[in-house]
Image (cartoon, rainbow, N blue to C red; front, top):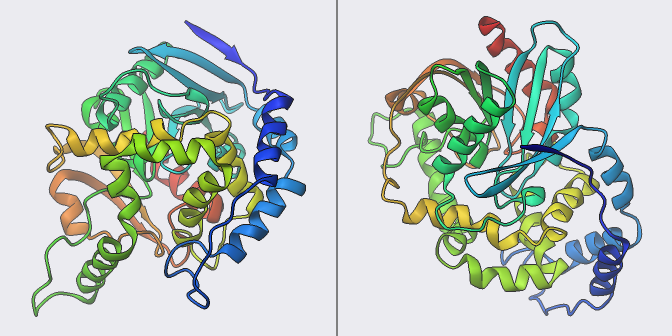
Length: 366
């Protein structure tokens, strides 16, 4: 059963948020250290002031409600999704999946251009994230999500479709294509998990191989801490993030700032709408659990090969630098495009580049 969904947050939930923001208990910080120890207080105070006094949730809510939205229950979990049909005859269905700490609000700048380009869009919230609400049982890793999304596309009457994603959306989209090759005509990714250098390059290595290794080392040394916590103690983390809106904001804003290309920063209102979809739904803990499930799954090792035609759009400021010869070991790479700008969130940073790359890749499957 698929039910229509209309987003309307009760005013008392917004009043509670404002009260909590007004009563924030601020920590001390060391002088002159910038971002080295985490999010600076000066940055966060300014962002909180904008959130409290200028950000307009009702406007964001109205924008999201321009999309037809629905919910359904699959494998015991609620799945919320937007479903945008193209006016173009014989439109190609395309399921586009967000990651952490994103949401379907990431796609407001690409949805219109993609439907105009001839795609019927399905934009789901991953179970445990945002408007899908918390999951109710263990085991919701990317493989289980992919199986649920395959069932979602069947319920929508799509026997043939494409898949697109980055971050967790990349892992889910890849798995969707790998396990449903008769239905998924192609997979378009803007991140490919595990395609970067994982061993120190030798003396004959290329400059790209060296750069890939060095960026991976910086990640492991300086930026992986959030993932380690979410992979091991997501419930403990959830208490702070579910009780404190400033804590939730800091946890997410750090990633939107560090992972985006400084030349295409993400706007404050875009950031805050994503944060609101975690805060209002209380899904800080349940969204983090996908990290735990991956880390503790029996199949947590190397990915299984996928024969589905796969495209990768490489944006230079993403968290890892992929290497094609590694990607081709387990993926049927048929398109590889490297751009000179953009980072981890191209739908918000470089929507025109992402839309063009998606359109050109799927043209062959129409």
